[in-house]
Length: 410
Length: 93
Image (cartoon, rainbow over all chains, first blue to last red; front, side):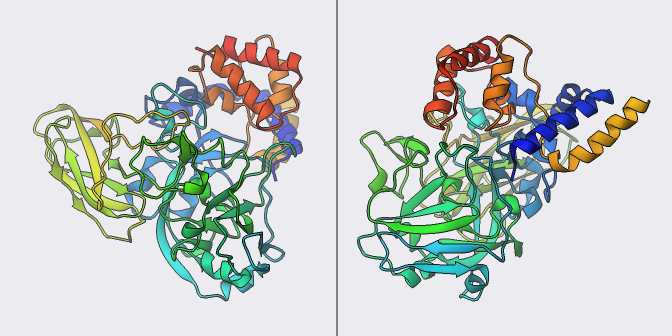
């Protein structure tokens, strides 16, 4: 738990370091200069972001210390699976308890359930286990690239990751309490909370139909290991295809409800304007005349090699990257090396399932020295593709503008 | 030298607990004390730097209001005005 006491100690440590003549602001700037942050990000985040390691994590791009918001550097997206120690960290609230697995209990019950049930971690692990490879992407990934800028955590490209999640079906837990047919949503709470009790607790719901899908899990393993503390230990919700806001960490309660869940984090937070995005999966019990909760991830891709601004030698060059969507599956990735005039199909890598990152590669042979640009565009199996112009919205969600990388050939 | 050794010892003791958070130095200007006193209890001050310099005056007003109304920050009206003015002057567009 990060407390006021830690804060004071942090200030003390800073004063001590100042005594040693280590100028923190200067070193932070130096670090930021080497981070290769997208130029489109607000100047403030380009100046203040640093590469720092949280306990149990590799150095990640620190956007905010408390609550901790750290994104994954692009280099880790060259494989379809993101390592646990490089997986991004995102919290809304600063009180994050270290959960003791031996005492942890998960409660199921609410007015949308016939009865109640409670589970220990051991009990959950004894139930039939399911594995799914799925992308967890923050709704606001790439928010920092919005023009004009919008307030929030100013993410670049790395508020996402793909892991092999192992756990039990949420449906199996709901069955133990008995889901009433009147239940329209299932609400979730986690162990984290705000610093003051007036701060709305982070509670999220999903439609009942989504809750009982075979791939919606309560997961206790990530890539064959227990969940890292900062990714939701001991158990979190996995909602494949939907954005990370629903993937409740440090899960403590599952509440079937017969009325739409209220609260700040359902409305006004995490809303997209109605009719602007090509969304299939709707959350009708929460829709208003003007907006709706964000649901499924829009089709997207990212070029991971070369990186923006890289120097490459003349000769064969492999353009590599990943593509993903909300669970329909990637059908094609095309690459353009002439600014979008012509496109050619890239070769897709291993298929780890419809919710996973799909790697791609394209062999390019730069013919002349100088600056060159490559672009990538993914299309999914229901024909959705990426946009060329940003679909602006107040909260900065669903940025899936075609990624463009400029490099120098020498 | 002696002072340095003491400082080093203090850092060594304090750092394990504080390894996750280093102090964020905001611009020294009138109102900074109110910003540090009211804002840093709930979140680190890099949130302010990160969200700059693009906000106009209306957006900084809206952010301060959101912290009070939506997130329940116990900030007096007088302090809220000082904080909003500091943000507009130092981290606004």
